[in-house]
Length: 134
Image 1: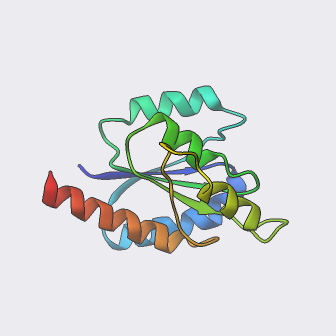
Image 2: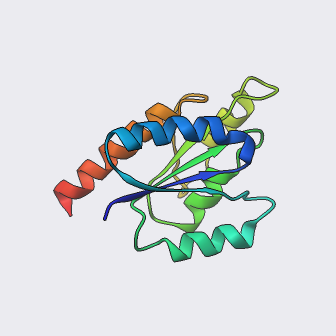
């Protein structure tokens, strides 16, 4: 069963997650949505990543402000991670720049600010590749 994990850094990111879910529902893809902050709930994030390792193929991480969530996730898994920066006080530029400046060895694919639709579509393309190769 192919499954996409959609992880929000905060409940305030729910509107972006709804955009992701709308695309995944349209394509009848299994997904799991969780609100887990990399800063406030690091142990819960670790636990979720370990428990979902077998089921999840791609992770979409939605975060604003410092936007640490995608990078933290990418440092803990070999699964593809897609970051979705969320607009905020600096119009989302702070989140965007945080996500694209990952250190070597911690890859995160990043879509446009608030662009949950593109994150879902990219995840679908990755799933298609794994089905052809796997």
